[in-house]
Length: 291
Image (cartoon, rainbow, N blue to C red; front, side):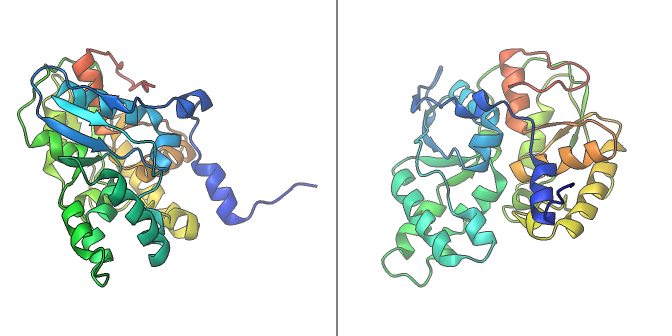
């Protein structure tokens, strides 16, 4: 008898990436020294979804930060900043994760994040603790240190030379938690434009959400699927076979819906392309993924 999956479970299977287990099990070094002139000491949040499904993005993030002059500390815990709980309406659970995150990361020059959903939640910690006299001031000070990795890098001139990556063209997707919640739009685009030979393409109606939206694609799979299909169609219409998106949920959603349309899109985090450019890695015209 054929087993029929519950819609939520079916959506999990549909979205799951083909990530080698050995990749997600590799641990980041707890400390990575800066190369060249030192610009500062930052803490890097590894995240929960990011470290499991996109461990290569985390490794690329540490390499780029070090190449750009930052000492990088990557504590293994806490594993979750509370973003998923906050986006789902579980305020107490979110505050518990946030307290752990603040305690672990508050002693650094900046707290660097490469997942847009995590960054938007951490920048909102002041609001999350606004009624807690024991944590309000501490949370506000912490939130002021949080930086998306593209935000941090774009604020300074590039230190490491950039090289061509052989990709040709890539379509840029604005993750909602980056573009709207954090108002970070030009920073990643400017970093990508510094890569020699890379053509950055914009899809028609760039403002359309991909349907990931935290856990929306799990809780409302039908509506999210329609948004995902529309976003994948618009990205494919640019003619690029590689997409740049700065949020793990967006990467999963776009990849899955491109496959359902019978197409393959290599979805990169901006930091992966910067890492390839700094190291001189040729990704190929079809956007072969680097792990």
